Image (cartoon, rainbow, N blue to C red; front, side, top):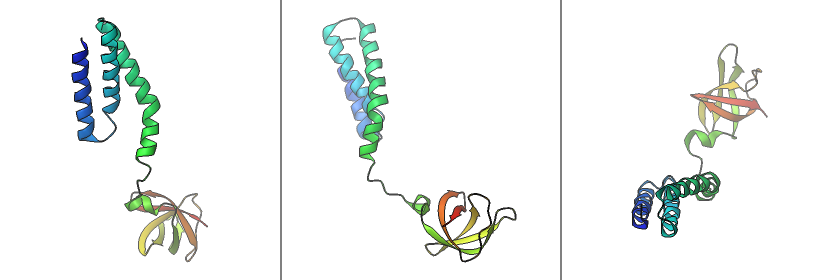
Length: 141
């Protein structure tokens, strides 16, 4: 493939990345650019393809985690994820064996279970460690 084919492939991947905005196709675009540069050096399409694959994999493995970390670092927790780490008041004794327990988290009542299976008495202060379905998994503070 000549360098124009690689440039077309680069543009296709770049446009797909602009449409998706999910850091999915940009890595292939970088690989296509490397294939384009290789096409200027050699006419061997096998070498160009190998360079494309190697550069794509290297960029994907090493740069994607860094890019995701810095691009998505301002994401705020929403809905259920925002409850993890919050303090709650036990409204009804928590007893995992008898499937009982209820807590109040930010004024909302949740069915609760203790993280370690221990019983937690009414009016105790607990911390939410996880949400499993409609149940808050808590530990005593």
